[in-house]
Length: 134
Image (cartoon, rainbow, N blue to C red):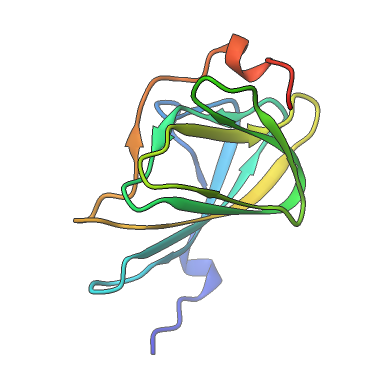
């Protein structure tokens, strides 16, 4: 058993290489091998979002507060709200973030494959972000 005290995991600002806008991350777990689980609590300010990305073993996000958007390549975004769960299949190009006028927070859960949890692509364009949601 390993207990990680909350004070030992400081909140960190997400990298502008992979996010647009103000995004804050609170680590939850990076389990040691052979376990693969990685989890973060992520807070997106209104309008903030990830870049396009994929996960080698997929990703699950659980929305804990607010309203946000999720998008797949070539499709209009969909609205997500507190209590929703979204699963992205392995290697599915996607993005997620807050709605334009509302903050959103989620728990992101993914597994590492050979130490890798995500492959980051280009930033989500304003045209993709502001496309009328389904």
